[in-house]
Image 1 (cartoon, helix red, strand yellow):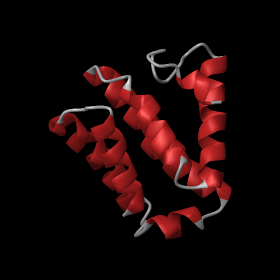
Image 2: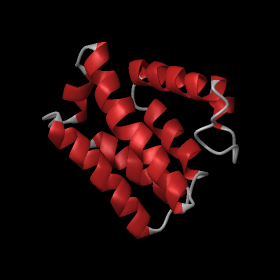
Image 3: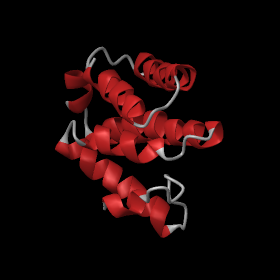
Image 4: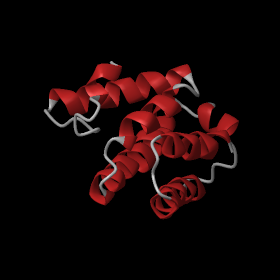
Length: 119
């Protein structure tokens, strides 16, 4: 699936160790299974609310928290950038999520590098 490959590639580029990357992929797979999404195309055809619920609430938010907790907060900028490249509508949702986080003073990338620069 294109989404899982984008996450894998982003984490590899950020030099995240395999065991942490495996946890990340498990989060993605669990979210997709929970909502019955079988492929990336199907996910991007969902209405905005459903796409936001899956992509932002169930995948990106838990991934960024897990990467921060594991000490790989810098990988969040790779992850967000990689996912934004997949689909323009998803990119818009991710920009909005990052803008809200940055506006609240909570850069999802721990300012290393700043995700707030993605806007």
